[in-house]
Length: 98
Image (cartoon, rainbow, N blue to C red):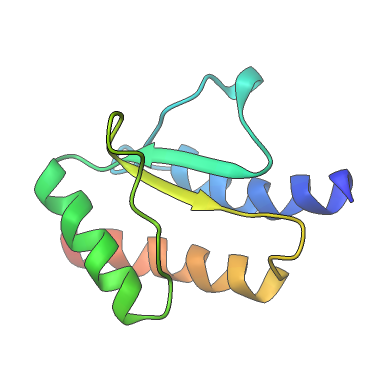
């Protein structure tokens, strides 16, 4: 299960690491295989991101109220198809807002 979760989060972290538009919260060595946290260039873009994600069926993606940013929870039962949808969404959002 850990290998599968690592594969899922690696797809997301690869997008985050390949651009300056998204900035990961955690050091690479401390990253979670359950919660992928990151920021966008502004809080306004983070709000737009969360709203747009919700309109695409990706809900509760907003980060913790004390930290802000975005948090994608990729628990054991979260399917690879959902991860692929999120990766596509990350790329499309950056293309239209980056």
